[in-house]
Length: 184
Image (cartoon, rainbow, N blue to C red; front, side, top):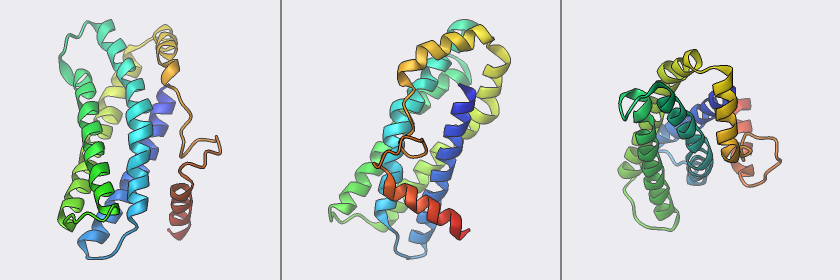
């Protein structure tokens, strides 16, 4: 379970780096492929917001129930942050769709939306990786992890971008990532 979460976080970090690079290019007045940005946000909206975060929410609630934490502390905050991240994802996706549908949106708004989104995501990932996941690893027993795995089983979907399903849905983004890795 933790290995999957860490892997998902590494993949999300990769995509956040793509968004940061696109925001930098926009700041410099350069053109960017908005479809790549949209595909990154679409992936995060579909996979992270609909599978990864709900899986984490179940894990975090299990921990809170076990230790008797009632709406306090950083673990409880993560569910609230997941809602904020979902709202930020939706906002950025809406901005991108407006632009791609030829609505006039100031470049500065797109840059700000991307940077705000990336900042929220990175802060959240750091909180989970540095503080919360190590706490859960120290606290939860093998029996707890087995129970959690049963509870999250219906949230465990194959990753449509980084998984092995051969899913063609994010083929353009997958190709972009492979080409950008070979250029570095």
